[in-house]
Image 1: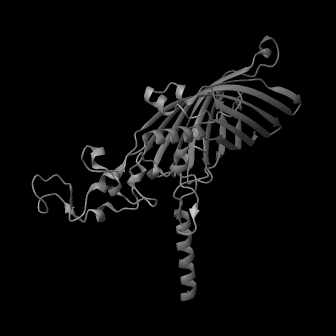
Image 2 (image 1 turned 180 degrees about the horizontal axis):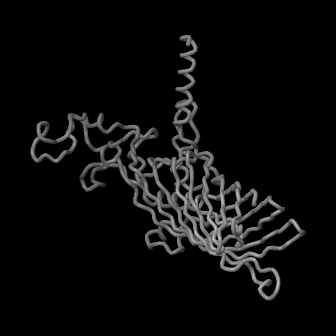
Image 3 (image 1 turned 135 degrees about the horizontal axis):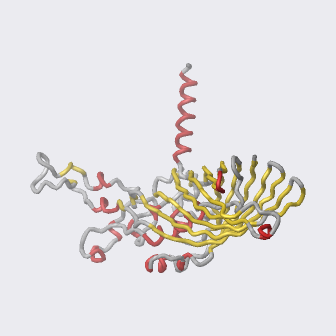
Length: 363
């Protein structure tokens, strides 16, 4: 390999690695979610000189995590990642199989400050860094998934699903299960009844290093197939879904522009041989200050519930299936069986809705 070619290959690899390392515009930026933004500057450097020690009881000054903003952000991310329950009450039947592609578009409160400060925004070409604030968050979170569904006896059906969210590094995955309580009757007295099914699902995410999110759900559907011709069936359906969201942050450095060890002039740990009794293992600083160590935090865990209604229709022609669905909050997020503290936090968060589309084959 020539030196020139090796240098070019190295440059391309470094460029590719740098590109992949960059966060996408709608990736979380939890380090910006603080209640006292004067504690750091635009590039995340700790600015203790802007803080009054009396506001902290005379103790060490620090950035204060905005747990309310984190709760609102998780609530809206969770709505977008929640199981879609996009199916009629009729299953694929014993031995049936369905493979499909699903696209979801979830409306978010893109004008809210927690979206502007809580997401990365576009790359600033002058500094090759993420923006200081995301001034134009997307109005919708997109989610594209591949689904594989298998039918079993007794009206049981199981689905596996994997997906990704554009403009982020987030992947999703999970499974659904449902049971048809009444299906398949087309003639006689029972022929006038709709198909009825109940089910549930779970979704979790990866690729978001700053937080983990899991969403579980229970749902129920009513549907009625309407034959159009020998090979065509259109099936409208309605349903109800109850959602549980579990969001937890990782360790978040609220001042990523400041190296805490360098700021304190790190000398080692207070342990036998290096410090003075009592040997508590704490950091020993030289001429610097240890305050920045207090700026690494974990946001309060988020445990939320939502309720939504769904209405959809699917059309099947022989082995091809096409579907559409609309999902929306049945009641405001603040009133959906959440704690009193969460009700107050979510008071101004609007209801959300999601449009979903599906294309697949059934055999």
